[in-house]
Amino acid sequence: MKAIVTLLFILFIGFAAQAQENTAEVKVETTKKEIVTETSKENSVARLYRFKNSRIKKELSFKTKRSTAKLA
Image (cartoon, rainbow, N blue to C red; front, side, top):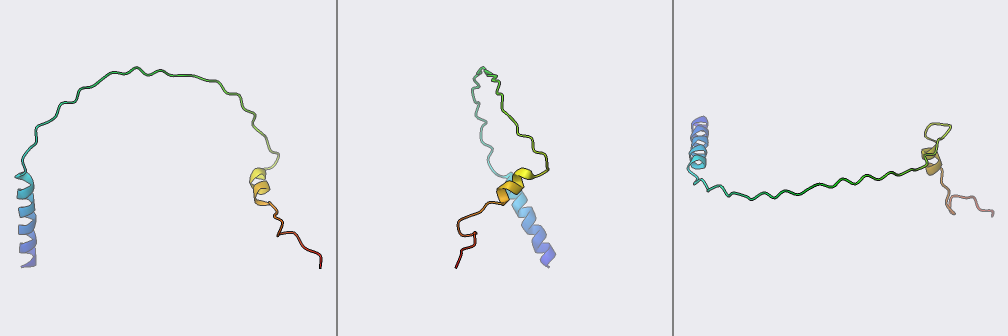
């Protein structure tokens, strides 16, 4: 019984979807625009490190005022 009701429901939804009115296609005017490519040359200095991940280790080894030991 459940299978029959499910099948009828799916068929009903399919027929309802096909019965929708088709809307007229709207023509869109296209315009041409020229693309201007600008080339710029940048020279930047890359820093070379002797050891792998030295930049990451430097960033992670930061110290704050509270991380230093205080004398009693």
